Amino acid sequence: MAKIIFNRKIASNIYHLKIEGKFEGSRGQFYMLRGWDGYHPVLSRPFSIFDLDSQSISFIYQVIGEGTRLLSKLKKEDTIQIFGPYGKGFPPAKGNVALIGGGMGLAPLYLTARELKVDNKVELVDIYLGFKEKAFLTDCFEKVAHKLIIDIGGLISQKVNVNLYDYVFACGPEEMMKAIVKQKKEQKTQIFISLERRMGCGLGACLSCTCQTSKGNKLTCQDGPVFRGEEIFFA
Amino acid sequence: MHNNLQVKFGPLLFKNPVVAASGTFGTGYQQHFDLSQLGGICSKGLTLEPKAGNKGIRIWETASGIMNSIGLENIGIKSYLKQELPILRDLKVRIIVNVSGATIEEYIKIVSLIPEEVDLIELNISCPNVQEGGLLFGMTSQTARELVREVRKVTKLPLMVKLSPNTDDLVKIAQSCEEEGADGLSLINTFKAMAVDLDQRKPVFDNVYAGLSGPAIKPIALRMVHEVCQKVSIPVMGIGGICNGRDALEFIMVGATCIQVGTANFMNPAVCLQIIEEMDRYLKKEGIHSLEEIRGIIK
Image 1 (cartoon, helix red, strand yellow):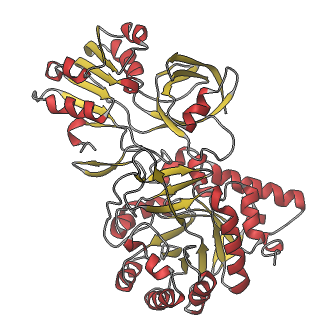
Image 2 (spheres, chains in turn purple, orange; image 1 turned 60 degrees about the vertical axis):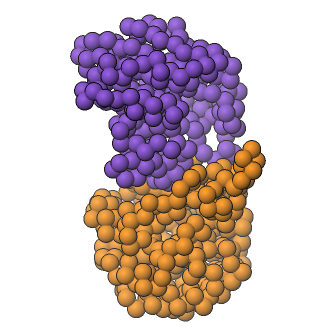
Image 3 (spheres, rainbow over the protein chains, first blue to last red; image 1 turned 180 degrees about the vertical axis):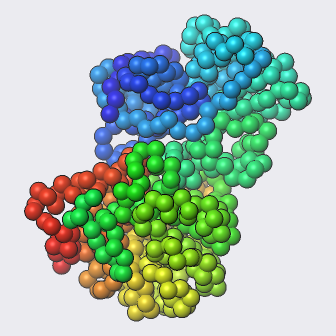
């Protein structure tokens, strides 16, 4: 059981949850959160690490169903169960890096950007964020980006040229990630994407989150959620 | 070690009766507790050849339960024996290998491949999600009988048959398995169920039906284990929505020797360990020295 520092609404239906404690984890990994007692909902909910330091961990989530609705009711000092870190996150990068987030796909990119910004192998970190209606957390990303490009209502994938970068890390709707992978022409550009799938256990046991790749079936929770973009057969 | 929790399941001694159910557990859980504390671990449902599993949504929640339609995705028995069995062997827990097939011949082939270092074979005749899941054999006592008879001939390993609740003939099927030489039974597998996507006006699952598990099915599972335990003398592993020590003890009281934990592993990855500790606490509090004192006390 961990204690909640805050659970703040940052946009319509979108919350920033900060939990007290020293947690493990690296960029692009996720935790399973359970903010309710008893057996309904049965499954805990997977969320990418938004940020992490020696005293806390935080997550960004959108209220979609019953699990996130219950999460959104939690207040400061309430307790929550948190299991993780799970999965494989974003790899080391060097040179010029682009981070591309579509909607809630921005969640794993903040810690990533924060780390890359102070990585002396990395020349620059450009961040591209696409939103459907209204932007959020942009001031936060502004601080860790060399250049922050925002799109509202359009397609963020059309605002980026991935071939200008050595590394591209993307997370968002499958259509967005597919379009980004398709853009790649330069051999040097390495694209990694973070997939979202309905999950049961988060630990590679239930096989609910299988995704199809050029290397056969892979588990989003254990082999991913971060994969090489070219390997994924998008849904 | 909790000596009061030791149980004998047919020819096998288990250090405790808590077994991780097929398809709900793996070595990934080592991140949360020392797996050698478990009574046993059932493998994912294995088939002769690797299977890619079902397309579309594979897991869906309902009130106090989940439905799954994984479709027996697995790496195939040969890869399992090569890659996963050696890891499990080092854990010193009872290793239970869960196998399925579409035909008697397939079951015979797969069972013949299982080496002696495996403690117990769990013959799955109850997966509702694919044809190869053996449910065909789990629906009537005649088909179950034929299958167990043929499989019994090709292995000396202890053999347990995992039964389906999706039949009117559960007790008869259980008795047939016993008569044909099964060393034990595990029950029950998931209930055939359905979910509808109201917005799209279609079934949630590509396969239309899926298997329901979790706390929602526990009272029915308990009744079924009770019914079967009244009528067979081979040991039973009770399965169905077990989430805590009390649930586990209820299954023991209606006659189960061991219990399997499935869906609850998804709610709390260390739940098996908690169940062991809760059972131990209960026994100490009640002054019970062995589970035998309470097993089947509810007639």
